[in-house]
Image (tube, rainbow, N blue to C red; front, side, top):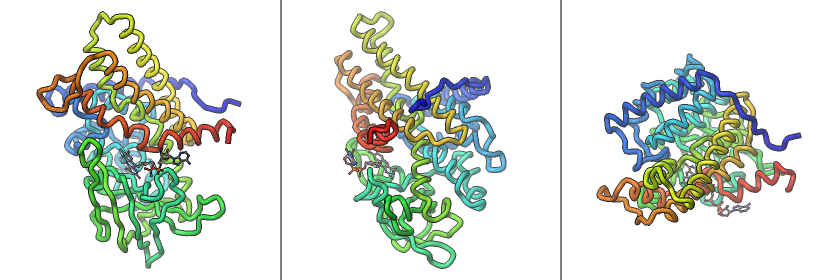
Length: 383
Ligand SMILES: Cc1cc2nc3c(=O)[nH]c(=O)nc-3n(C[C@H](O)[C@H](O)[C@H](O)COP(=O)(O)OP(=O)(O)OC[C@H]3O[C@@H](n4cnc5c(N)ncnc54)[C@H](O)[C@@H]3O)c2cc1C
């Protein structure tokens, strides 16, 4: 029996049409000078861009029409996602909602939550963050201490989250909280809730990152009341849901295309007549990229069938983030250029500057390399 499920999915003709649709939208955006590819990535938050992407029909496309979706396939969505990343589009505002929160609400949310939230996500008007990590539980999510207790028709939440990307910009978080006893395997008693950031009892405090930017935050809950219709799944099912959600979070092309623009600029800088060393180094990167694209598309096909390819997703994220950390290393070996962030630096130096500052986070966000390797080892029967 195959341990890992990596088939070569056949992209339907509609996926090519979706790709063309995304390319036309992006060409128009670039022509209008509405974003700078060398200064942005999927972790750049730009609400105006997301509203335009929503209007162009590029968000929530697989969801049912009654919730604002288009009932298109996961492979069409995959093609669109890939194009947005390859263009260096600033898509963080809608990214989490489109990638994981919306699908989770569709599968586990109440009818009221689906009706109130999903179509706004599709229009690019409603943004989500992830409230999993806490000070004492990043890798070990079973250790979350944030508590939710029954209160009338809802729940009262107390506790804190940390490293919450965009908590200061989003409308909602999906937060993991303890609602009961952990049990022997420590995976029991956890429940996910949709947190409306406009409700009282939630405070956001900024944390500046290594690049000096404000991307993530601490989030504190003090007697925060969440109505029961914003609970996801049954109480105590949170662990299984988080695990499923991580397959969406870890397997996409965002786990190896964060700095694709640097690869493009590297090829531009080296030009059409590379020497032997340049050809070997860039050729190796492109070959790895091609394999990653195949692996990740294959997971998109498994997700489309309703499966939970968590082990394969862990593998793609581990190999993918190693690849995206390799790009700046190769770029620095091949081109003698100081990274720069100021507008006077050339495009290559600016792209390199941005990537060098953000690359350390690639193997941490969404699950560290050691944790992913533990999951992969378990999948191989090694632990
Ligand atoms: C840019 C960025 C954005 C993020 N955004 C979010 C967000 O929006 N929402 C959110 O909830 N979280 C977010 N995170 C948090 C991220 O998921 C955690 O940082 C990550 O899961 C690691 O947890 P930790 O920081 O608590 O480290 P720890 O869990 O304390 O780990 C520290 C080190 O120990 C290693 N380690 C831990 N346990 C084991 C083990 N069992 N075996 C071997 N090694 C181990 C880890 O690999 C790591 O190297 C973000 C992180 C970054 C960097």
